[in-house]
Image (cartoon, rainbow, N blue to C red; front, top):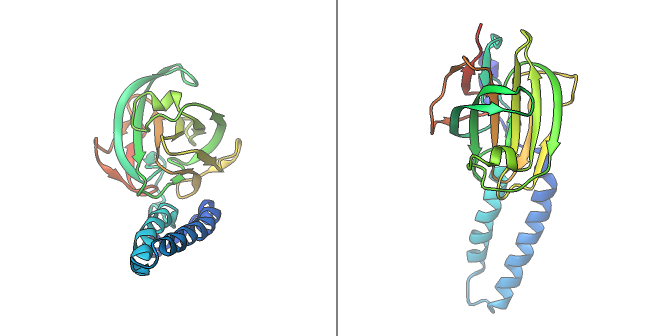
Length: 231
């Protein structure tokens, strides 16, 4: 347990951000230099460094990839937050794509300032992975769940319960990355994927699942328990 807590504090940059950060740094540095020369040095160079350095720091923060562990081996009924963010939906909905019945949907909205790595919400086996093209409505809108570009990962837990995790693109997001592979075992603490720039993740659970979060609550991916499946 002690080792897991220690590892939880380690931070690294996600591999999805490598190219963006390298080319972004070159672009920002070039723009800052051009503007500095355009103003004929009337504005101190450090002013440009502060402004564009802040922009770069926001992007750098976005691509953080914390090494996290839930800290318990008793994960049989647990559903953990697949993302950092804020709970924006807890409601029963009709799910027509896979289950064709009512499901409990818990949605987490990720702002530009959140870590955008995604984790598997449950242990189990990946039953299905699908990607759907679509619109780019603001991620917190109800219609975003079905109309926006999204990727679905359907997971079957060891006791046979199906859990759907949906990565949804937002108004700024233009790339959804999914690492899940059909037929492979998956575990809490493992990365499911990554969404670039502002987005949302929905988790669909069986009716009767115990909800462990409330509206507006902040979540930490792979750390906050959002629900407990029926025994």
